[in-house]
Length: 366
Image (cartoon, rainbow, N blue to C red; front, side, top):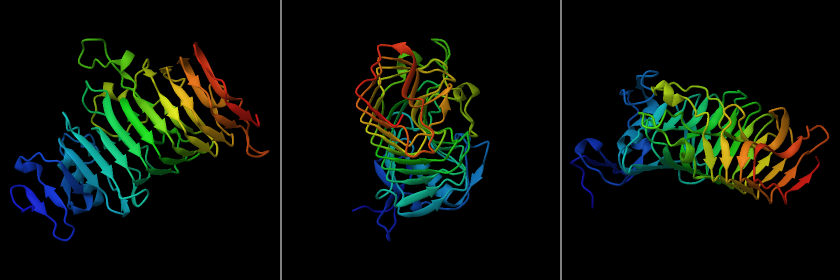
């Protein structure tokens, strides 16, 4: 049995156990967000949103307290079923060392968060699952980005989540992920017409070798797997965007850390079994900062409807600005759903590079 005391409290109505970080304990634990207090919470200057909002309350305070309690441990953060609305930005702190978190609901789409125009930042690796997020009004819905200047390992996964993003804003991104090691699978994303992207993949700006911000750009951007997702995109919106510009979320990051790299090379991307149904582009590497791609594979994906939106003068379902050793095979591309749909110029376009394979794909109605 567990007895309250020494930093441990027991909620007798729910049976959940809370372990206070102030008691010096460092246990694996499950934290129920709704067991946290809704009372006003003063943010510290360790929170990236400190300069933007110094005091929060309500559900935002509950979620922030749950994140703070988990910091530095291997912890599960549980959100019970129901609808919850943010009224401020919140951040999962970078716990350092072996810290790894899970943030989850009971089952697909039973626990929902209306971001209400705000952002949830994950500054530590986190596995997010079985949650619904309404990103409408948010410049960035979920932001995965380390605060440490020497760490590009984001080490996160997003699975069985549902995203609704009806912004129609060219700056809007549902999920923005900086760094390597992302597993993104079994999700549904609905993104509005003319949004920047559903999922944006970025790598940090780096300085010269041996400096304080020496990021391993040449070989560091890798271990990204995107599989079995349904993208309900609208016209002119990439489901997944590699690189591209950013719109700032109010944080305390040093300016250099806010800038995406201009010469990163994404290696070993696995992009399998995804569905794009209802306009937009399935995948695009931005011509803005021209990230290279090496040894990527695209297979088993299906695209339908057209109205992709123009990238670098043409419309296509998959656009790669610079690719080497990219394999695009075994995909199905349907260019038009009706006589009123704009037919893409091509199913696939790789602008430059070499040793690429784009064969054994089906293409109809082009």
